[in-house]
Image (cartoon, rainbow, N blue to C red; front, side, top):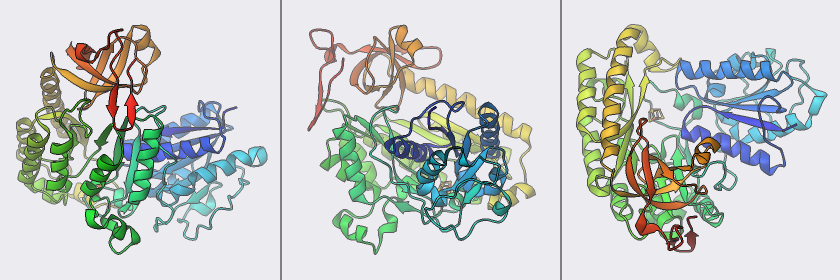
Length: 505
Ligand code: SF4
């Protein structure tokens, strides 16, 4: 019987947390497998919307139905926000909030090792002797489930086991946790606490270990990635970073200067954290040398709204014109190959037709390659909850606006991708599902974040140069290995980056 299964919900940073738990459990010798046969099912939840909460509850109920013997451990943002709701669900043996996330692997191990001695719901679940939780939330005492949640976040940074290429060819390295901003729609400051950063020595150690394990592309992620290092002031890490200043740009430069990592990708960064230094790095490292850009030409800047009035109600720290300036500075630095992405929220309380039109207009004028669209969802405990009670936007209106933005996003995405037909791009090959591989194709992701289907069967985690032939119905690029990158026997030439050699097959 496999020991555990981890089910992920939520953003890339949350996924990195879940993967860190899996890595620790595998390193402790536990097997991993299907939830229907696992002894412990870890549900790594998100709470960004009411729908995310519903999806997590539905999964827990289904997992318990399919495997009533499994002990379910719920962690992540929903576990932090409303532990009592989850502790009351059948099959739940423990609720571990983000405040105690670093203890989650130990709690799972204890549950597995306690074997049949205690089952969820019988009140006899063994209590891990890891730490005393002094401020359990009200309501937990009545449940048989253990609840590990407080508002101090003292055990919240789960420094990952060494990140290696594996099930995920392009893993996340989470270097920052929490957020001190107070955007009125967002529950994250409650569920993850203030901003904390992984020390620079740990980041560099992780990157070097990843390269040594044959990794080619690493994604730097965080809840508010652009705030990395700001919490070091007055700490030993402040001295360590010293001359390079405690900024994300300083860290990115050190990674690119001091390690042989072939490709670094930055995940979402708030518009105002794209400072001149970070944009300058894009210009310096994003242009094609022998083997393609080392800093991926991809930037995700959350927009949320194109209306100044709505941004103010959201307590966002930039105005629409700031956003526009940052985008054009990035395009100038990276070139028009840059793939630009954004999150846009629809139906924030009081959003008028005119305010929504401003968003449509702004989206229309900027060169977006993709958009993540979200309807506003009121989260308990936020200012947005009260604003929604005062000035809700009707569901039908939200749906209509979502449809308009969806259509615009689709059009822009296709136009962006069509520009690459007939051109060469660098890409990394991914783990390809058997059905696609059997059809003689390989899935990949271009350096500038476009999904691609490559003619031919290639192993995962290869850096390849491709010639784009067209787009399929879903908008995925269709490509063949570029002649200029092929060796005499039809295999791709090796790409060399300092000490790292990545050879295509
Ligand atoms: S910047 Fe705003 S939206 Fe983003 S995590 Fe922080 S509070 Fe939430």
